[in-house]
Length: 390
Image 1 (tube, rainbow, N blue to C red):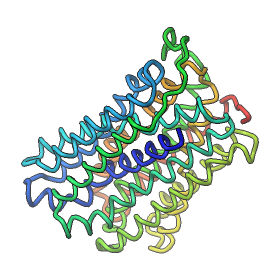
Image 2 (spheres, helix red, strand yellow):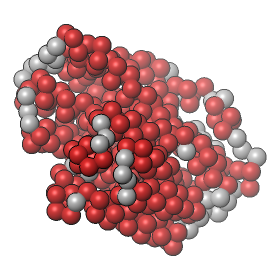
Image 3 (cartoon, one colour):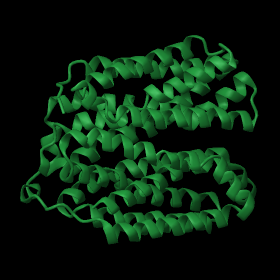
Image 4 (cartoon, rainbow, N blue to C red):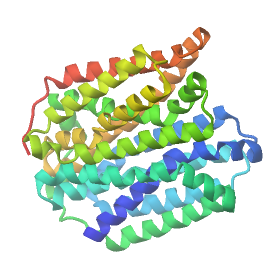
């Protein structure tokens, strides 16, 4: 089982890589395929949509079939196959289709690990293991920046993506070989996601699931570059450095949030306090977006650290799932987080366009304050959620 978990975490490294690699390959895809930035933004958004839509059937499959086939077959068939289609693409339509397939393929990997943690490890360890998985997996996001640029320059973007596809197929094969399905729960046959949706606490935790992931993820993945370019006039090297620092801060935050529930004997209040500090970071960035390069870099890094509560919120929500519905429960919360993040990419894009006429830092101030409002509302609702000590 430990070997299976290791390969699931490697699969999540690939998932993080695939959600980030389009940005680095953009110049090559524009030059070779005639793609536009709008084409690539749409393809990236469809990755999130596919990933989110897959969560409900993935949850059902985890509870009824188990994690071995649920994770390995989609990762190999859709993830590896989609990457090969990407490498052979001759136009933007093929890029979009390949990103949809890759999104479907990556969808089961992390929640399959969560399913195993819930069934095979002591309950107090869930938050620590979830944070460790996301922290290690986030290095895939780092690999999709400067290392990918070096590889594409050395081997070409098509050759690099083919290599990534081969790695994906190897990891999928390892999942099929090493994962052992936990003993099935006969009660899962009669279980339903509607039983989870009838729990009031879930509706108070779900907004924090979104607010504890989307602001830092969207700003790191979408808005750091334009912010640093338009406000501070940084080039690619400077933007890459700021993005790298924020990405590393997010990884550190995932590791820090993991054991926090056991340290505080509470699954709730560590999340609440951390997101109050994330709200402070967003408010400072929104009210003083032109504060200076070093100060802005500091607050972005702080946001990355405090805004990485995703695994801790997942641990809180998992405490309310009966064993027979763990697969559907963790998939449902992932649907809220990833699906909501995809929608917020569209909303913040329109917000940036609406304030672009004001010039300067105004569009970014609007985005930061919008995210601050989102976190504030989520915190208010989360305040009324029930706690569960680990």
